[in-house]
Length: 371
Image (cartoon, rainbow, N blue to C red; front, side, top):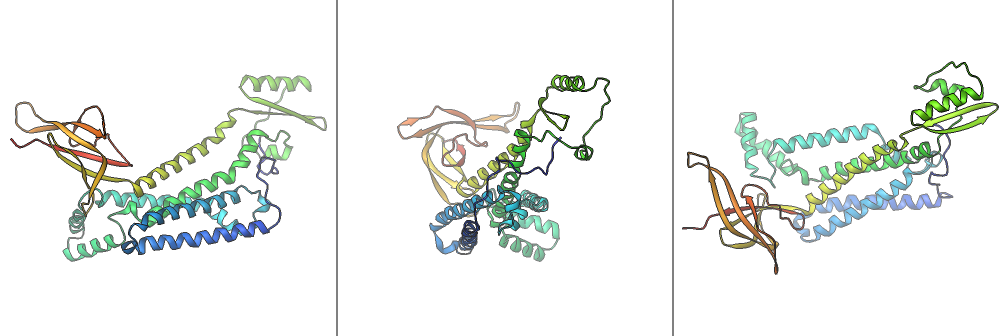
């Protein structure tokens, strides 16, 4: 039996005295928010002339976001009576269920579009034009749909600003919502309200009344024995001649939702880091040769270089029994990192290699030597 309206305990982070500090934090918050918006505009609108500065801007965006998140987290931890400041609308916005539902629907929609349409870092986006022609049945309408989709980023969805914005919005919502409820959850776990009056008991959705023949202390001991047998941790109190017993077990299970939220956020962080700094490419190595160059997957097919070398020692073809049709391709690869040589690994030439560096995933394609 828990009273949700019980006053804040010492576990709640106290609010700073006076409004001056909150006004300063408010100024810092809006300053970083404006800077974040300008940096995002500069990154996507000026990507053609910023050159290598784009990587620096990505770091600045991350820094401003962390500052904003830190301020919102501190605001979410404040007790209810302190939430009449400038940050109240922001906290209410991020803990709103409607905001979370709409964000999840938009992310699901983007994922569906990204699955149906060929993405430029995976294959040839020209296949999408064929798909539009099959859908519309008209070459002109298909071309217009193709051009519009290209301009709004449908062929590179997982690198668009609105995809990152939705991930950031959902992550912020999870963090603020978790911190908003964490003090109260911890208070219920560590210092539950033992003395519950009659009206509070009747208002509880989970309650049961028992009639027992023993009276007074005997009835109390009987109830305690039943609760202990059920594995409950007991707390008891007495006021105005009334004895109160409170049993609780599995209290730490209340923290399960926070573990789930943290796991989702870590997945988002890993996805964003891989999307911004990661890359994928192909390597084509002739049998007996060594190479560190690979072709980046995408429209432009840029050439990259790995910090190590890969040597193709052997290449074999496995055919179907009784026919000359190829069934599988295998290559024997050796990774050379300076003076150190990793053990040879036999792998399928059509399957990703397990060797990765700097967040990259390389796909080795080996071909037999001529003759």
